[in-house]
Length: 191
Image 1 (cartoon, helix red, strand yellow):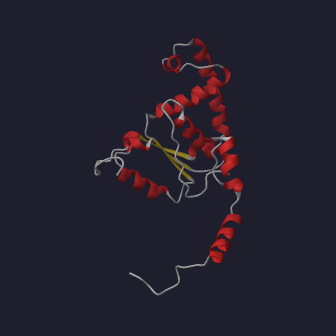
Image 2 (cartoon, rainbow, N blue to C red):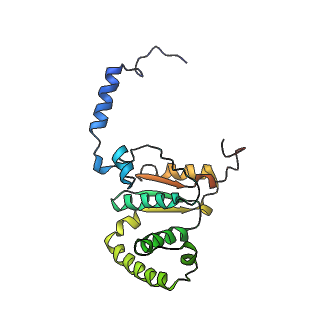
Image 3 (tube, rainbow, N blue to C red):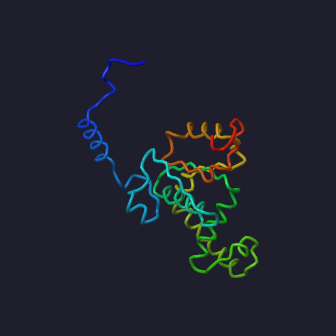
């Protein structure tokens, strides 16, 4: 239907003025961050309603980057909705421990997973004690990350409903491995 109304039209000058008002009202310290210095420096952070897709070959720690983005933003009082679809929740805990341990000692994922390296056992104990201390310091961030597991999210429609439910109460939504969602009512994942 074509309307004669000009309510939905603006000239370029009005567009630029509206954009400048919106742009200048943004407080850079309040937006979510990547916590990758190069990305934050170049892009300024993750803007409201911005879609960020992280793509790379396997085994380059894309999920770890997603979890780090969630954790570091939650420490800054941002509320994060995290859909962890690749593995189970133990993977998030395992990655956190591996990251902390690898700061002081190179870590072999296999020996860490099966707890076969005595040095890793000692470091794990120290890291868990550190997390206990950190838990009191950063209690809010642990409460600011809401995590859904793969088995709790059967279809894309269900994840859409959850996003609609939390949309106005969170600052960031992270879907780790969207490709794992079952698209039962669609012909294929591309659709």
